[in-house]
Image (cartoon, rainbow, N blue to C red; front, side, top):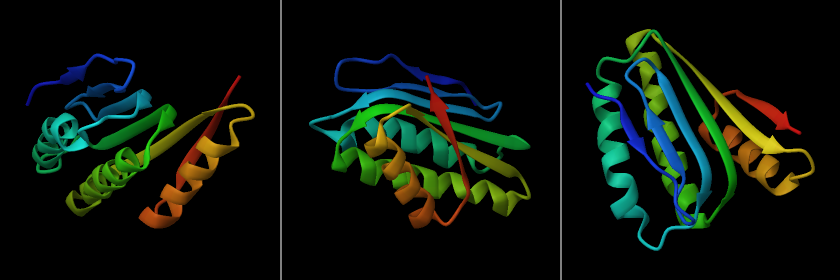
Length: 124
């Protein structure tokens, strides 16, 4: 399995998906066509969870994302929870800027919807 890297644009986040268990999504996510952008990411995750690393660390560091992206993120994180079915562990880290209550609240919402603990990490 190969690492997947997608460079950021003004509308899409930087994506790093490593078979070593490092998954990073950083930046802005305001796509016009979320399905087109996220399809290769979902395909990579589906393959990854078949033989995951012992520890999967997901770092979500988003400055802004729209509701279409939020639905996709919840779906992708739901898939990643399945590494526990392989007796592997996962950590979800949610980064937010000091004073950015919107991003913090969206992370707290994800934590409740996914029913998994998040580490909330304040930047700055």
